[in-house]
Amino acid sequence: MFFGGYILVMIVGALISGAAALWVRSSYSKYSKQMSASGLSGAQVARMILDRNGLSNVRVEPVAGQLTDHYDPSSKTVRLSEGNFAKSSIAAVSVSAHECGHAIQDASGYLPMKLRAGLFPIVSFSSQVWVPLFFVGIFMGASGAGQLFIQIAAILFMAVLAFHVVTLPVEINASTRAYGLLNRYGVLSSREADGTRRVLTAAAFTYIAAALTALLTLLYLLFLSQND
Image (cartoon, rainbow, N blue to C red; front, side):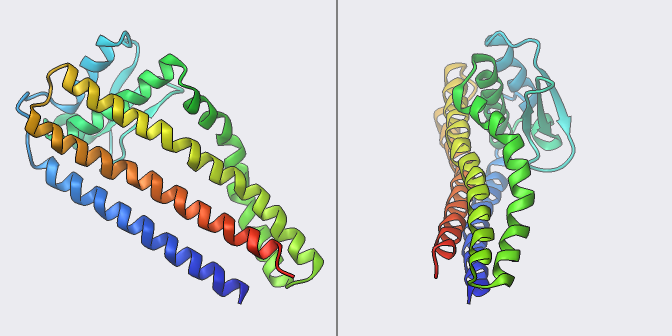
């Protein structure tokens, strides 16, 4: 019964995450085919935003893959997937501006970003340990020792949930900054701005979905840990 409950939680989580991923890919696919009137590529927009915000030290580089865009705070580099780096689509411009939003957060000492960075080593450890402890507890059954293992797994998983929760303001703020910067610098027309909003909203929902899935998992672990 316990294991079946875990499978159910994982299925629900997979459905939520799958819906979010489908929305992102659908929005990205649609607006990657619509070119921005500015004619600026994702790389050019990123360079412009960074330079205008005093971040000429931050590099802009292409990275292999699709939707592999990210900001690397350790090397101060905005990495854009090859399509977004070279194309001038609404999607490319939107994603590039979002990643620049992270670079601006880093430079300004944005607190949630600092908290996320601080949680990362803890989460890396917790993510590797909580699952084995959970399964040990499940196989030991409803004994005191079994519940203890599940309780430890739940405590470790709290760090995973905290990481997802802290990630939400980081990503939403980066998207808000991106939308504002693109409008302020005249990169987008009013028609294109709606496309940017849709792309960034869809991307933000993936992080909301991850946080919801993590919350469901934690609630399940807490339920098991108290089940006599």
